[in-house]
Image (cartoon, rainbow, N blue to C red):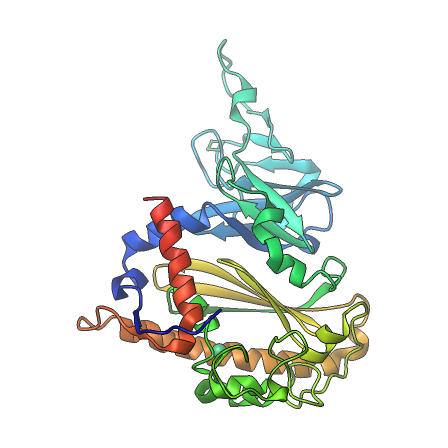
Length: 378
Ligand code: FES
Ligand SMILES: [Fe+2]
C-alpha cells in the first residue's frame, strides 16, 4: 500500500465514544461479518458449550455431534429469558433447559418439552426452535455470522488473508496459553494502532530490535525509506533481524520449528493475517499467536490473546514457551497503554478530528473500509 501523499483527516472524534455510532458499527460490521468467537477445542465433546458475546448479542456455542458446531442466541423462545448463565459448561443429557419455566431444547435447537404447560390446539413446538446463528470453522477457529442471510461464505470472507497462513497447521495446533484483558478504548482505536508502526520507535523499543524496519516507524520496507537488506525478505515482506528467527527478546527460538513452512516464511520470521474486525493471527516459525477483539461498549474492548504450539510439546517446553509469552505480553501491554491514552484524549471538546501522516496509510485504509461499510448500510 503506497504512502499517503497528502494530509488526510481522521474520523470524527465523536465516532469513538458516541453510543449511536457504536450501534451503527455493530449493525454494519459486527452483526454482518464473520466474527471469530473461539476455538473448536473449547468444546471437545457433544454437549459442551461456551458463551460468546458479539456486540450486545449473547450466543451459546455448542457441539451437537462430532464435527457439528451449533450456535444459538442465548434466549428462550417462550418469553425470552436467558438460557445459560455460566460462561462455559456442559448440557447434561443433551438438553438445554431454560431456568425460568423449564422449557427444554435439544442440542439441535428443537423445543422438546414444555413442562406443565396447559395444552391448546394451536401450539406447535416446531415453531419455537432456538434462534440459530450461522457458524463455520477454519483452522480450528469458530466463526459466527449474525446476519440471517450472510453476504458471503466464511471462505470468501477469509480470502487471501487465510491463504497467507496455509502452511501453518492451525487446526492441529493447540492453544497452550490464553490471556484476557480489558482496554478502555473504542475497538477502532485498537485497529488503528495495529495499522501503523509510526508509534513503534517510541512505544516498542524491544520489538524494534527484533524487526529492524519498525525502527523507521513504518510497517514494511515498501514504504518510502532508505532500503536496507535487513528490512525485508525475498518477497518484500518485513522480516526479523539477521540471525533472529522469531519474536522473543533475543530473537532466538528454542521451540521446535513448525514443519512445512517455506524458506521465505522461515526467513521473515512472522506472517500476519488480519480478519477484521474480530481477530488477527501471526504465524511464527515456532509458534502462532492470535489476538481477538470483543467490543463491550463504545469505549471498551476486551482482548483475548492465545499462544499456540504443536500438540504434545507444551510440558516439555514450558520455559521456552514462557519466553515467547513474556514478549507477546509486553507488546500487547505497550499497545494497550497508548490505545487508552488515545481514547482519553479524543474526548477533548476542542478535538473534532486529527490528521494522518504519510506512513499512516494503513489507518487511512481502515477508515476507508469503515466508511464504505457504514455507507453500504446507510
Ligand atoms: S422464558 Fe424460558 S421457559 Fe419461560
Ligand atoms: Fe504497536
